[in-house]
Amino acid sequence: MKRFMIWLPVVLLLGVHWPSFPAWGRSGAEHDLTFRNDHETLERWQRMTPEEKQDLRERYRRWQSLPPEEKDDLRRKYERWRQMSAEEKATVRRNFERWRKISPEQRELLRERWQRWRELPPERREALRRRFQQLRELPPEKRQELREQFRQRLEGLSPEEKQRRRESLRERFNRLPPEERRDLREKFRERKQR
Picture 1 (cartoon, one colour):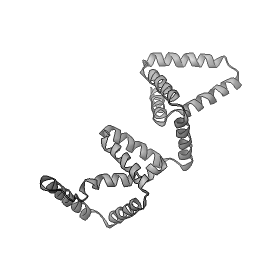
Picture 2 (cartoon, one colour):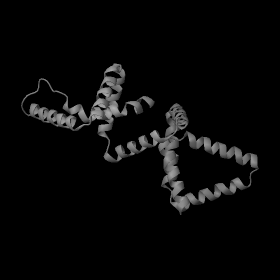
Picture 3 (cartoon, helix red, strand yellow):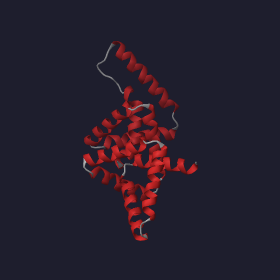
Picture 4 (cartoon, helix red, strand yellow):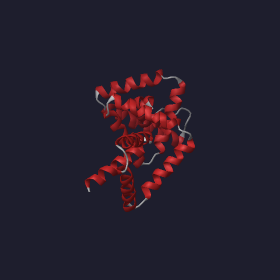
């Protein structure tokens, strides 16, 4: 994940310029398309500031120095990126911006949680996804009723037991995938605003 975040700009850059790489051995309409792409690429290059050009050169040098396995991995990720819908890409960009803004300690915590999620057996992850989806699909009144039932059960507990339950819930929440935790936080904020 960390490597992907570091190389995301390179992958995005390649995506912008990938179609314009020379297409040797082509002729006719394919050659015209390549020529047009090369021309557009040259125009983009000429519009770039010296800093942008230098940044592009550095990224290219880093790309050249990557081992073949990492290049292949990035190509696969780039291909997945190209196949994403505009909405999915917007979500990825928002998440990336959020990632850049959090502290290194929070990043490390997220990496650890992600690793724990990945270590869960596939059946367990799928069961958790299903349960969360079922909860998400409940009408707001039913979710509120479940919250009230939960609160009532908590009221009859000793302070130590309440603390243990809170920690257990926190731990379970932390084991959820980041997107599910984000969804829960957003729903909690909405409920709080009402």
